[in-house]
Image (cartoon, rainbow, N blue to C red; front, side):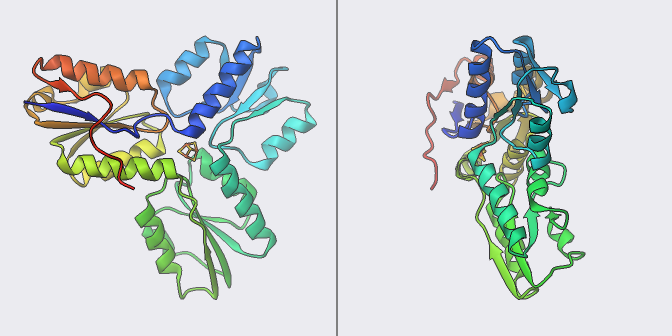
Length: 296
Ligand code: F3S
């Protein structure tokens, strides 16, 4: 008899919830607003916001008098400066954990450190941090990037909030001995870490893992990658995606199906996916609220 387990840590994190609350509040006040880049990496949520009148812009010049929301990933200081010069109101939804990294980056630069960020070079969070870290900062993604890295005497190491902890520490270890001074900041977000650990714990027991979240969502991709180490894993965005891309025979035959979701995946999508899998097999017992304790 099959069973579905939903990870307790699946879905919205504190930073995403906060950003959405700020948008809702502005909309309630009757504001027309824009977001500087898609608010979160979830196309379904971004779509529903668009219908409520939240326009995505990539250039502050397009704000046309409307307040502009800075998403939880944050933005480079130039964006805030430009807004001030142009008299544009900013609703700052930068996640406080991201803000902390930005501040650390700026401080390290002031103190003469080379800032090295472990993360994805194209991710908006990393691009934002780079803005605070000055022109000399370097982004390292995989271990192979370290070969070409030219380090100076003082290095400050920071991680994108959604990085995998063991990878980050491996990078830190390999920098030891290459520089006179190495400062390593543990900037991985706890919500991300707890979600990754719980996903791994469930994936070790499950026949199939369903990881729900936007294709561009860094933390969802991380989750899928972790689950793949243990079991057959599907990364899907929605129910439509489940139906189109998941081998439903496999779902039917599974004894245990694990479900988790990234930080930007709304509850209703998670529920919809679980329901549609449960419906597929009448026998399937729907586990309410998850059965696996988050590993801490
Ligand atoms: Fe913030 Fe962590 Fe979410 S950094 S946006 S609470 S994943």
